[in-house]
Image (cartoon, rainbow, N blue to C red; front, side):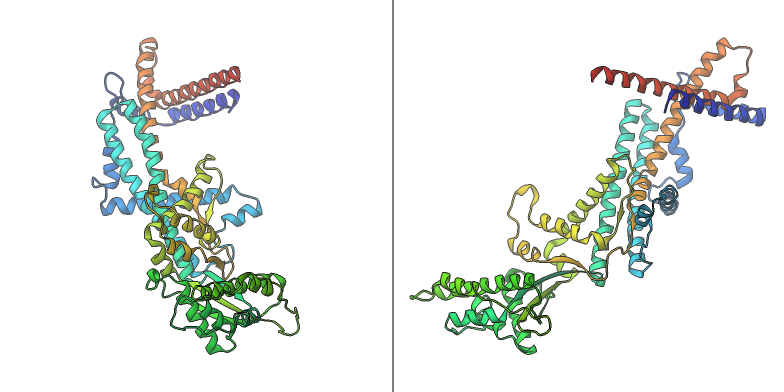
Length: 499
């Protein structure tokens, strides 16, 4: 703001104040002036108790039903107002699409996610409201500017922190809702070539295998090589599950579904993955046989032979078969394996990332939260959480890390489920801090006004300043604005001298 704009603003404030002084009756102005004078002690310090005013609005109890209902209403209204402001000030079509709550139409799941997030945002706001009331009571008791400055800073920090902690619970629940509904799925799959597996078992001289050995690469190779019917494929998938899931997680991961599907090799990429996994499995079988034999199998020779194996790419006919072992990790198993602490901390990390995007740039960027679109990022964060322990004081559970790391978040029905307005909720979380700040600024303005009034009364004895109550308040506000502008100008000059 330039000096000209500032003087224009000050002139507007004074003009409005003068109009009020002209329009309001003298008796009313006298009464207002008397109340303003009574809010300061003889020394000029502010003596109005804001805590008493809040007690009249919300009741004396911090967590009474009256307080809960009224501040929940204030919080919800604040979120709606912040969202409406963002919608009103955005004109770019691409940006409007990000602000639109339901870009692809409202669904019951999207509405449930939105209600969940708003509810937990209100809970966080209510906790910050309670802290703000305690801070205001402390300010009323001590009347110390240092305490007031420290508490307003602490209030802003605690309001944001409480909102982020509360919203992270809603974020975690939203991810679980999306997973449980089938909107997104955690999938893992491995492709195998039965032709390579058959050739591999032939190179190993078709050894016998033990179906009761649950961790045998040889048994798995034989089952997959012979998976040419629905029953044999089901048997192979069941054995694959037993072989892959560690014994320590067998109970918690029992609900993971394993399905063996038969298909055709249609592209080079699929052939490459199927070839590599099949060769690796055959080589593991060779190593397993060498452990119990005196005459060892030449593993390198087996590898070289299988590496020269080729396939026929025929788009019209299925000339080369493919076996795919597909696994689906349900939400219940995800919680069971990762644990509630890691699940919540991963959600908190994603909230902290969004929070940084908003708060680091003056609350200007509009950030939304879509659990369907952001689930892959959450899952990546969850894997990182499981790989780390508190202060690295212990080793992570490698069985859990190994199991979780094989899955990838896949969108089943497209993304853009719901755009939860995260930025408006962050702004709304500062509502109680704004009330606190307005209270402190009001005390500053009234104290300065009364001091200026007392000093001016001695010089302007012929003027009845009590009848110009609005003008004296406007003059005080204008003087504060001019002082702040002057301080900013000095700071800018000092900065230019330094650089």
